[in-house]
Image 1 (cartoon, rainbow, N blue to C red):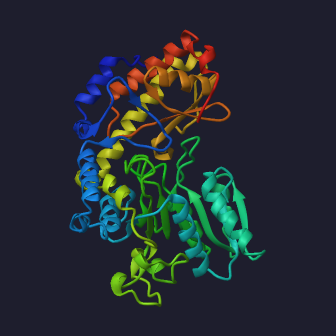
Image 2 (image 1 turned 90 degrees about the vertical axis):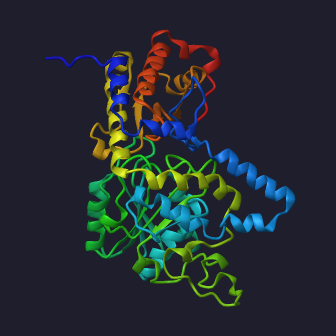
Image 3 (image 1 turned 45 degrees about the vertical axis):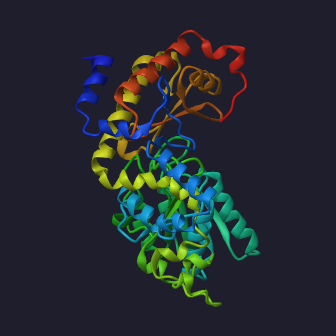
Length: 413
């Protein structure tokens, strides 16, 4: 027996029963635009404008006390504690600082120092390029001491763990397909062979379950500007288990990672725990934009947020099949939510041009060569009605061949 087709009425009913539907009211959303971008920026909390204007006023007046009242020194830890539940971490285990790329260097270098003289770093062929580039730079600088071994699948990663591997630096979610790996299973296999783990959680944190403590992962990094909404180019984060953090000095030592920040002593003494990874002066302006999240994340039950993402993306996949399957759309993300990250990816004829047409029709999404479209589903703001409307606009673009218009031939990412 065929399932009953899903309708707008079904989407409205799902929204009516959604315990987190009110979260949309905390964000500035552009009327008529549905933000499904899986690239580099999440929705903006309404409170950000006031924070930004206050920061600028203090700058113009050169009010030093204004800076001090902003708790700029403690903001990396305060923000880290706020997002910690969303990645399965505890208080004092996460700090917000620097970029994903810099934190990748810190984490991999730290694990290599702990696991010396092991010399192999394990990573995915399909890992996000910056994560791989960081490792390749370290290998180049090692003058032959280190090497990089690539694998493709979760099972290959488990099989590749041996006594030569120092660290497995892996992405929790494939940025193109949206496939999520079993962090606990892989980490357990790594630890059985004495391998340390570094997980990039950029494409999962704030959307789907991440369990750093439960999985016993050693270190983790991620950007804050996607589902965590720290703003354009916002600061990233780094996590470390206490015993891992304290095992050796940080590879990138700076005054903010010192045990006595304002002691101004010549010689470095690392701060206990994850704070040692705050190298330089915090990005005061960026952290001020992110500060609004202190009043959002601690009030959200992670289980409810993840359940909302499951409901939204399950609906999206069902509607893509139902409305666009006959038009050449093929979902490539896992259909099992336990194996799915923040975005839903699918193949489409003329994918790049379709994304350009979608933007003109009020749906912001992203394209990845050769034929992948990614819909990033932020459970903070996307509604079930948004999902229904997104697929309706996509269907129109395909049915009417709108994407074939000459103005959509030039494709961006």
